[in-house]
Length: 276
Image (cartoon, rainbow, N blue to C red; front, top):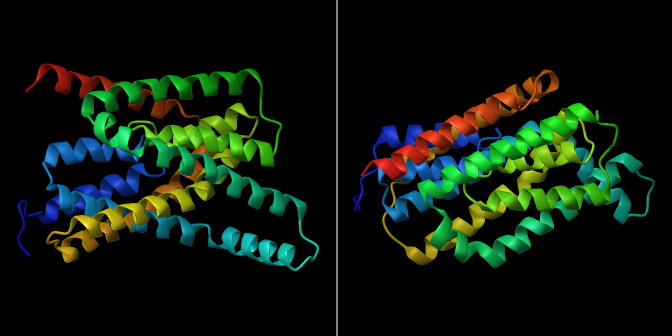
């Protein structure tokens, strides 16, 4: 198919890798995609289609990786509906995930137009990347001063949901905001990360559905074979990154991502302000 911008296979590979790597690392996948779209000068229709499919691919990755946990939660929900005994820790996790999804959905519906019109710009991404790095730094400092002792609760679930809503701003990492938020609320890094990944499923899926609906309204010719290739790369990459990051966060801090965000924000700001 031919359209105003003919997506090359290399573009599909780049975007698939960017989405797969950044979706579950605390570095902002949306911010990176904004930057890459600007760099590649993608056609609007093609870029929207690609973003939608990439979100479905990374949703599939996290669902498959956490399938045992999701299957257990589904069984807990069915047992609860049938008025059968349930494990209290599992039902608390289920409730926390449900209420944690609400803030981002409601705030996203209210602020979507503002974000699209004013915030999807490289210079804004640079500022938010820098601010996010400072936030992660603060979370690590508090974590060091007061080691975690808490478990996930209904209240903590909804509070982490508000942290997740910060990711509506391009440049603020969804996983980073929820992990740092969980740490500030007393969860250890691993539990905060695990909850963050589970909490991501309805949000990432919802974004993919929303983009798909927008795509249907917009119309236009799309090379689905090329896009599917990029989605496959995003899926495989996301599985690897999820596994790697869960192992990494058991032993190490968010400091590498703090420095990454600071350096990247400086580079993006320089290019945005001082180059044409």
